[in-house]
Image (tube, rainbow, N blue to C red; front, side, top):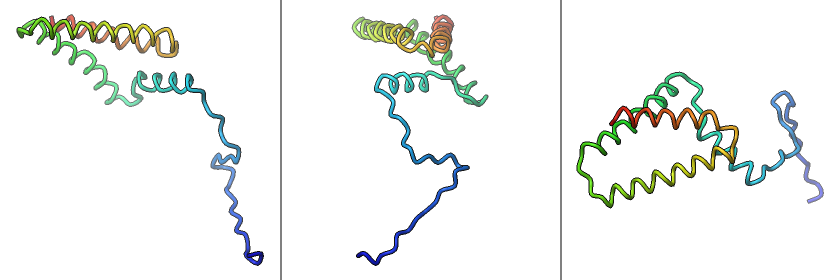
Length: 119
């Protein structure tokens, strides 16, 4: 066993390799980073156009169905409860993650425009 040769591999430093492990983020920082990535707008133009169009078209379709289709009262009440919970979560995110304040306001505004178009 003592006669075995050790193999040494050198990694070039121009690739950004660092033998020191990167510091671990706290759970709160991971939470914030996850929401920033989830709410951020896409970088390329086709994905951005699709995201903005769907942010208006889907709420417009749903609000149009809400107005024109006879839906039982308990389903309407459940949907209103879900919307209230979503509003509370949006307010929480606005305060907890200040990096998403502007993008969150844009997305909520687009959804509001879609709802108004559907009515």
